[in-house]
Image (tube, rainbow, N blue to C red):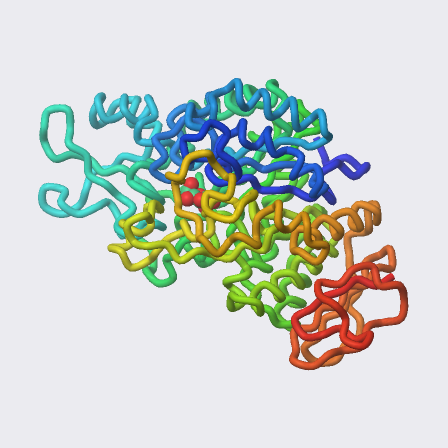
Length: 523
Ligand code: GLC
């Protein structure tokens, strides 16, 4: 099966990433849930998004907030159970919004029945063949099988106690010890994933974001690695833990199932920065879309932004697949903070929102980005990300970008929940950032996103490339195939705009000129 010549819905869609713990709490237990999403679906339809990507809602002990899956074919009661997902899919479809889910094929939870069975069955058993169990090295096997670190810190191997009480084998976990890696050489693993794919697709789910899509396949013999540059989502391209060739067979298998559901999409989380390598994941019989993280890495600087765009477009062109664009997600610092925080950080984030939404391809907006939320400095005792503990309390982890959304009112929990005991504390100073407050303000970040998404939809499908125009230093100017030009000023002095109608600007113009830290669209 090849990619269809008619552009599929996702090729220029705006996806909204719902972080379910933090969007809206429908049952008052302090943690967001799926009925909360249903209640505030109007927020998403007013924003104009085409699709939702839900972070994991499947059954999980929540060691890594759902990325440790104990049952991939059921919804955790914390999020409302399977019935709540059905309600969401139905309500979203009724307003024309597609629903995509997170799929976690690299590992399971250590509470998954397969892993529990593997522990009980002992070395050499068929049950252990579903994971990566190995004997240790050195006298009595005291050293792990190789030197791989976990992405969250500490070794990637944990030693188990065998059923007879003796110190035993080690199992591999690229992430937390509660996330054992699956053995993708065992055909049972794919067979089970196929069941999961069909289970959700048959329930009406419109596709999957595939977690660690460059993981899964491990190199033969699990060789040692060079120990520089281990950090969450910053692994280098020569890291033997990721991007091994056999991963492409897995994607072909997944695609063969997806092809039975031609309207469904797969989007891979691919932390691979070599364009040719990245493009391999998007061959016609593999993933439909791949996250390209170059804009996340770029500073607010015209040259860096241009390079990121050029690179992402080049990778997409190599693959013959739509480009994807994102400024943030649940794993990285929010862009307002990345760009320096305060009013300047917000101004830059608003300008970048217009850059993002001017680009051809699929765009991903992260839960709260449309409100201009910054990262939150949280006290040590509320941190929950396993990174905090695993790094020996040196890396604070990702909780700061996962704080719940403020909906209304003048004090926490800002109508996120009826409970004051919210899973991560919300800052008292978010009064002006609530959805209700921003709805009253025509210059709010929310108003900017709504207008920009509306204009983007009005542009129809614009072609895959952009033309970079002559611009002064620190200014980036590019034109879409439909003639809409986006200009962003990352310098310190105002700059002229090209002639034409001003469609939108991220801040008021200064005497007809585009001020610093501002972007605009002109037609
Ligand atoms: C991905 C997810 C991240 C998670 C990790 C392990 O990178 O985005 O949140 O911790 O995979 O599943």
